[in-house]
Length: 563
Image (cartoon, rainbow, N blue to C red):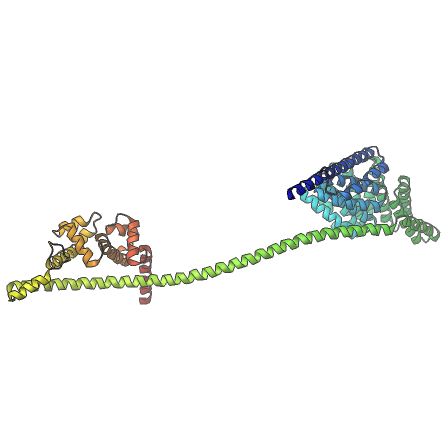
């Protein structure tokens, strides 16, 4: 039953999948058509018709913001530009916010930076200099990172003007120097901006003669090269401000009237309002209350037409968007901080584990060093006792030889029955048939004599066969005697003699201090250094190199104590 139900559920779901895909594809197609129509209208200068097409992108974007956000970003930026040209600043700000969101999704830095610059321009138009600079600086930094020189020029020009309005000529000059170092494509605009920037900087520095000169040059250049009349209005306004600061009110009024005339002719409402405000102030200074009141009424009436509440509403929307961006950044940073905390905790735990291991290894190493010293001292004692044993053995042999000679000269009288018992007791069942107890002792004595002769035992080719020949016996008897006496085979027995001599040489720094481990190994009959190291460690408990090092340290300590 379950497979059948599952089959029907899949059948029900399958028709919906292509429908969702088809719906998304349809909306993308609609957005593309609207974009194409809007761009075509822009080319024909049908700005309001183009704006109508771009406005229709808003519901499509809000429904599916993840589908082709780059297309929407360009559309919203173009719509904002149209609104800004038509001085519909509130609507322009709304479009630029949407442009920021869409271009961020599309990772389109070009559109994102254009939106930032245009938002800064709107704040500048409303004399909010600090906020304008905030957006200009943000956009400029991004353009420097992206090496977008054209956009850097735009941001620097706007920042120079803003700092001049804020009466900070030093900052304006700083950015003007940066601007002069940048390559520019539009030479006409570059020339105009250079003249205009020099004029407003001179004005901010109260160099009125220079300001008038550069403003006049900028006006003539704008008229001669048919630049956007907004630049002409701006130049007239700044020239008026320069005359006003000089106290030449008549000339200031004349410049403002010319600017107001150009603004009215080309429909630049906001610039016209600014001219009304400044004319009202100039006539007040001139004490012409009638004309001052006239321009004041015009300014207030036009200001009311620019809905300040709507501006604040969209401005709050922009602030909200910035807060969301900041929250997103803070969220990412918090995640990174948490990750870093866990990494720090993990590293700290690892550090303590490593520290504990180091302490443990250090303690074990100290124990091992003590053990090595014990082995070294024990071996040194064994060498000393071995030397004493050899001396005693030599004395014993001398006495034995004297006693033997004495018995030969004065044989003891032993009864026959007692002699027979002694002879029977002397026979050891464990001995080989050919060996009596007396012969065993004699064979062992001969073996030990040969083993004390360095000429033989330090020969690399010395072996059991040669030893048997030297003691006038065979390998079977010699091997049996060594094994029964010392419970070890011939090779181990031989290595002990060699290792004992190696220990002495390693201790004798005066004679063998310049010898390598290999030289010492070869000197006592070892053909392989590796075999020597294994045999040494087996007999002494530590490696020959460590033994040599400890011997040298002990000698150095003794010399230091004596010194």
